[in-house]
Length: 272
Image 1: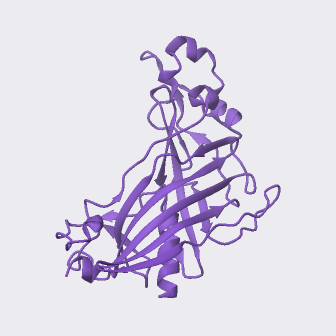
Image 2: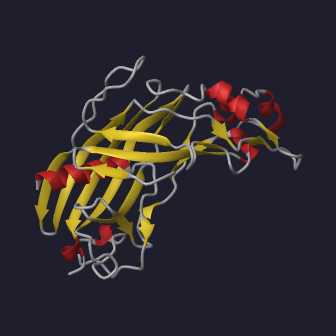
Protein backbone atom coordinates (compact mmCIF):
# COMPACT_ATOMS: atom_id res chain seq x y z
CA UNK A 1 0.00 0.00 0.00
CA UNK A 2 2.89 2.38 0.70
CA UNK A 3 4.22 2.52 -2.85
CA UNK A 4 0.74 2.76 -4.36
CA UNK A 5 -0.36 5.58 -2.06
CA UNK A 6 2.82 7.58 -2.62
CA UNK A 7 2.79 7.17 -6.39
CA UNK A 8 -0.92 7.95 -6.65
CA UNK A 9 -0.41 11.06 -4.55
CA UNK A 10 2.44 12.18 -6.77
CA UNK A 11 0.36 11.83 -9.90
CA UNK A 12 -2.58 13.59 -8.33
CA UNK A 13 -0.66 16.78 -7.69
CA UNK A 14 1.49 16.63 -10.79
CA UNK A 15 -1.40 16.84 -13.19
CA UNK A 16 -2.79 19.95 -11.45
CA UNK A 17 -2.75 22.15 -14.61
CA UNK A 18 -2.27 19.60 -17.49
CA UNK A 19 -4.37 17.26 -19.69
CA UNK A 20 -2.52 13.99 -19.23
CA UNK A 21 -5.32 11.63 -20.22
CA UNK A 22 -5.89 10.23 -23.68
CA UNK A 23 -9.67 9.64 -24.03
CA UNK A 24 -10.85 6.09 -24.56
CA UNK A 25 -14.28 4.61 -25.21
CA UNK A 26 -17.12 5.45 -22.88
CA UNK A 27 -16.89 3.49 -19.64
CA UNK A 28 -19.84 1.78 -18.02
CA UNK A 29 -21.81 3.16 -15.09
CA UNK A 30 -19.94 3.16 -11.76
CA UNK A 31 -21.40 1.15 -8.89
CA UNK A 32 -23.36 3.00 -6.16
CA UNK A 33 -21.02 5.09 -4.02
CA UNK A 34 -18.45 5.46 -6.79
CA UNK A 35 -20.16 7.95 -9.11
CA UNK A 36 -17.30 10.45 -8.71
CA UNK A 37 -15.11 8.01 -10.69
CA UNK A 38 -17.23 8.12 -13.86
CA UNK A 39 -14.21 9.50 -15.73
CA UNK A 40 -12.33 6.24 -15.15
CA UNK A 41 -12.31 3.62 -17.95
CA UNK A 42 -13.64 0.17 -17.09
CA UNK A 43 -11.68 -3.06 -17.54
CA UNK A 44 -12.84 -3.51 -21.14
CA UNK A 45 -11.55 -0.10 -22.20
CA UNK A 46 -8.41 -0.21 -20.05
CA UNK A 47 -7.37 -3.81 -19.27
CA UNK A 48 -4.17 -2.66 -17.53
CA UNK A 49 -5.95 -0.18 -15.31
CA UNK A 50 -5.96 -1.02 -11.61
CA UNK A 51 -7.09 2.14 -9.81
CA UNK A 52 -9.55 4.94 -10.50
CA UNK A 53 -8.49 8.44 -9.46
CA UNK A 54 -10.31 11.70 -8.84
CA UNK A 55 -8.22 14.73 -7.94
CA UNK A 56 -9.06 18.30 -7.00
CA UNK A 57 -6.30 20.90 -7.08
CA UNK A 58 -7.40 23.32 -4.40
CA UNK A 59 -4.80 26.05 -4.68
CA UNK A 60 -1.19 27.09 -4.97
CA UNK A 61 0.66 29.23 -7.48
CA UNK A 62 2.74 29.15 -10.64
CA UNK A 63 5.51 31.74 -10.95
CA UNK A 64 7.75 32.21 -13.96
CA UNK A 65 9.80 35.26 -14.65
CA UNK A 66 8.16 38.24 -12.95
CA UNK A 67 4.63 36.83 -13.19
CA UNK A 68 3.05 34.88 -10.33
CA UNK A 69 -0.34 33.33 -11.10
CA UNK A 70 -2.36 32.07 -8.12
CA UNK A 71 -4.37 28.88 -8.58
CA UNK A 72 -7.76 30.19 -7.47
CA UNK A 73 -10.16 28.07 -9.52
CA UNK A 74 -10.15 24.42 -8.38
CA UNK A 75 -9.14 21.95 -11.06
CA UNK A 76 -10.90 18.59 -11.07
CA UNK A 77 -9.67 15.58 -13.02
CA UNK A 78 -10.45 11.88 -13.08
CA UNK A 79 -9.26 8.78 -14.88
CA UNK A 80 -7.73 5.33 -14.58
CA UNK A 81 -4.19 4.53 -13.50
CA UNK A 82 -1.84 1.59 -13.89
CA UNK A 83 0.62 1.84 -10.96
CA UNK A 84 3.10 -0.50 -12.65
CA UNK A 85 3.60 1.64 -15.75
CA UNK A 86 2.34 5.06 -14.68
CA UNK A 87 0.04 5.21 -17.71
CA UNK A 88 -3.17 7.19 -17.21
CA UNK A 89 -6.30 7.10 -19.38
CA UNK A 90 -9.75 8.62 -19.14
CA UNK A 91 -13.23 8.01 -20.45
CA UNK A 92 -14.99 10.91 -22.22
CA UNK A 93 -16.41 11.92 -18.82
CA UNK A 94 -12.95 12.22 -17.31
CA UNK A 95 -9.60 13.82 -17.98
CA UNK A 96 -8.83 17.44 -17.25
CA UNK A 97 -10.91 20.28 -18.67
CA UNK A 98 -8.98 23.50 -19.38
CA UNK A 99 -9.29 25.86 -16.43
CA UNK A 100 -8.63 29.56 -16.71
CA UNK A 101 -6.61 31.21 -13.97
CA UNK A 102 -6.57 35.01 -13.85
CA UNK A 103 -3.16 36.61 -14.39
CA UNK A 104 -2.57 39.61 -12.10
CA UNK A 105 -2.00 42.83 -14.03
CA UNK A 106 -3.90 41.65 -17.10
CA UNK A 107 -2.77 42.40 -20.64
CA UNK A 108 -1.30 45.76 -19.60
CA UNK A 109 0.91 44.12 -16.99
CA UNK A 110 1.98 41.53 -19.55
CA UNK A 111 2.82 43.98 -22.34
CA UNK A 112 3.37 47.37 -20.69
CA UNK A 113 0.92 48.95 -23.17
CA UNK A 114 -0.95 51.17 -20.71
CA UNK A 115 -2.78 53.06 -23.49
CA UNK A 116 -4.87 49.94 -24.09
CA UNK A 117 -6.94 50.81 -21.00
CA UNK A 118 -8.18 54.04 -22.57
CA UNK A 119 -8.76 52.30 -25.88
CA UNK A 120 -10.59 49.18 -24.63
CA UNK A 121 -11.28 49.57 -20.92
CA UNK A 122 -9.78 47.48 -18.13
CA UNK A 123 -12.45 44.76 -18.20
CA UNK A 124 -11.61 43.83 -21.80
CA UNK A 125 -7.95 43.44 -20.83
CA UNK A 126 -8.42 40.68 -18.26
CA UNK A 127 -5.82 38.00 -18.94
CA UNK A 128 -6.09 34.28 -18.28
CA UNK A 129 -3.53 31.47 -18.27
CA UNK A 130 -4.36 27.87 -19.17
CA UNK A 131 -1.71 25.18 -18.74
CA UNK A 132 -1.52 22.54 -21.46
CA UNK A 133 0.55 19.42 -21.95
CA UNK A 134 3.61 19.86 -24.21
CA UNK A 135 5.08 16.34 -24.08
CA UNK A 136 5.01 12.99 -22.34
CA UNK A 137 4.78 13.07 -18.55
CA UNK A 138 7.11 10.68 -16.71
CA UNK A 139 6.13 9.32 -13.29
CA UNK A 140 9.01 7.95 -11.21
CA UNK A 141 8.68 5.42 -8.40
CA UNK A 142 11.32 7.45 -6.59
CA UNK A 143 8.69 10.10 -5.91
CA UNK A 144 9.12 12.61 -8.74
CA UNK A 145 6.96 13.57 -11.72
CA UNK A 146 8.55 15.07 -14.82
CA UNK A 147 5.95 17.18 -16.58
CA UNK A 148 6.52 19.12 -19.84
CA UNK A 149 3.97 21.92 -20.22
CA UNK A 150 3.15 25.08 -22.12
CA UNK A 151 1.11 28.04 -20.85
CA UNK A 152 -1.56 29.54 -23.09
CA UNK A 153 -2.11 33.28 -22.46
CA UNK A 154 -5.70 34.10 -23.34
CA UNK A 155 -7.13 37.47 -24.36
CA UNK A 156 -8.43 38.54 -27.78
CA UNK A 157 -5.91 41.38 -27.89
CA UNK A 158 -3.06 38.82 -27.91
CA UNK A 159 -4.40 36.66 -30.73
CA UNK A 160 -5.17 32.96 -30.28
CA UNK A 161 -1.64 31.52 -30.22
CA UNK A 162 0.15 33.40 -27.45
CA UNK A 163 2.15 30.82 -25.49
CA UNK A 164 5.06 30.45 -23.14
CA UNK A 165 6.53 27.05 -23.91
CA UNK A 166 5.90 24.65 -26.77
CA UNK A 167 6.36 21.04 -27.76
CA UNK A 168 9.78 21.98 -29.13
CA UNK A 169 10.73 24.02 -26.04
CA UNK A 170 8.54 23.00 -23.10
CA UNK A 171 8.60 24.17 -19.51
CA UNK A 172 9.74 20.98 -17.78
CA UNK A 173 8.56 20.60 -14.19
CA UNK A 174 10.10 18.11 -11.78
CA UNK A 175 7.41 18.00 -9.13
CA UNK A 176 8.06 16.54 -5.69
CA UNK A 177 6.52 16.44 -2.24
CA UNK A 178 10.05 16.52 -0.83
CA UNK A 179 12.68 19.28 -0.60
CA UNK A 180 14.04 20.91 -3.74
CA UNK A 181 17.68 21.66 -4.58
CA UNK A 182 17.42 24.59 -6.99
CA UNK A 183 20.23 26.57 -8.55
CA UNK A 184 20.67 30.10 -7.10
CA UNK A 185 19.19 32.55 -6.49
CA UNK A 186 16.28 30.29 -5.46
CA UNK A 187 16.55 28.48 -2.13
CA UNK A 188 15.22 25.06 -1.19
CA UNK A 189 11.49 24.71 -0.58
CA UNK A 190 9.60 21.68 0.71
CA UNK A 191 6.32 20.13 -0.39
CA UNK A 192 3.93 18.15 1.75
CA UNK A 193 2.99 14.47 1.70
CA UNK A 194 -0.79 13.99 1.63
CA UNK A 195 -2.58 12.70 4.71
CA UNK A 196 -4.04 9.22 4.21
CA UNK A 197 -7.45 7.90 5.26
CA UNK A 198 -9.76 5.08 4.18
CA UNK A 199 -13.45 4.18 4.14
CA UNK A 200 -14.71 0.60 3.87
CA UNK A 201 -18.15 1.19 2.38
CA UNK A 202 -17.61 2.30 -0.30
CA UNK A 203 -13.93 1.27 -0.31
CA UNK A 204 -12.11 4.50 -1.12
CA UNK A 205 -8.62 5.74 -0.25
CA UNK A 206 -8.30 9.46 0.48
CA UNK A 207 -5.17 11.60 0.17
CA UNK A 208 -5.73 15.07 1.61
CA UNK A 209 -3.80 18.32 1.99
CA UNK A 210 -0.79 17.33 -0.12
CA UNK A 211 1.47 19.79 -1.92
CA UNK A 212 3.94 19.46 -4.75
CA UNK A 213 6.75 21.94 -5.34
CA UNK A 214 9.42 22.73 -7.91
CA UNK A 215 11.66 25.79 -8.18
CA UNK A 216 14.39 24.44 -10.46
CA UNK A 217 12.73 24.75 -13.87
CA UNK A 218 13.46 27.22 -16.67
CA UNK A 219 10.89 29.06 -18.78
CA UNK A 220 11.43 30.07 -22.43
CA UNK A 221 10.35 33.29 -24.08
CA UNK A 222 6.86 33.92 -25.41
CA UNK A 223 5.81 32.94 -28.91
CA UNK A 224 2.81 33.65 -31.14
CA UNK A 225 1.74 36.79 -29.25
CA UNK A 226 0.32 39.48 -31.53
CA UNK A 227 -1.36 42.82 -30.97
CA UNK A 228 -4.74 42.32 -32.63
CA UNK A 229 -7.08 45.33 -32.67
CA UNK A 230 -10.07 46.24 -34.85
CA UNK A 231 -9.18 43.76 -37.56
CA UNK A 232 -5.88 45.49 -38.29
CA UNK A 233 -3.02 43.27 -39.40
CA UNK A 234 -1.62 41.69 -36.19
CA UNK A 235 1.74 42.99 -34.98
CA UNK A 236 4.13 40.63 -33.20
CA UNK A 237 4.70 41.60 -29.55
CA UNK A 238 6.72 38.66 -28.23
CA UNK A 239 9.52 41.07 -27.33
CA UNK A 240 7.19 43.24 -25.26
CA UNK A 241 5.79 40.24 -23.43
CA UNK A 242 9.28 38.95 -22.69
CA UNK A 243 10.65 42.27 -21.46
CA UNK A 244 7.65 42.96 -19.20
CA UNK A 245 7.46 39.40 -17.86
CA UNK A 246 11.13 38.64 -17.30
CA UNK A 247 11.25 35.95 -19.98
CA UNK A 248 13.04 33.81 -20.83
CA UNK A 249 13.79 33.03 -17.20
CA UNK A 250 16.57 30.59 -16.27
CA UNK A 251 16.39 27.72 -13.80
CA UNK A 252 16.50 28.99 -10.25
CA UNK A 253 14.25 31.99 -10.87
CA UNK A 254 10.84 30.26 -11.16
CA UNK A 255 8.66 28.27 -8.77
CA UNK A 256 5.38 26.42 -8.36
CA UNK A 257 3.36 24.90 -5.53
CA UNK A 258 0.25 22.78 -6.15
CA UNK A 259 -2.04 21.80 -3.27
CA UNK A 260 -4.29 18.81 -3.78
CA UNK A 261 -6.81 16.33 -2.45
CA UNK A 262 -7.36 12.96 -4.10
CA UNK A 263 -9.62 9.92 -4.01
CA UNK A 264 -8.52 6.47 -5.17
CA UNK A 265 -10.60 3.32 -5.68
CA UNK A 266 -9.96 -0.08 -7.23
CA UNK A 267 -11.22 -0.31 -10.80
CA UNK A 268 -12.86 -3.67 -10.05
CA UNK A 269 -14.97 -2.06 -7.31
CA UNK A 270 -15.95 0.94 -9.40
CA UNK A 271 -17.00 -1.38 -12.23
CA UNK A 272 -17.84 -4.73 -10.60
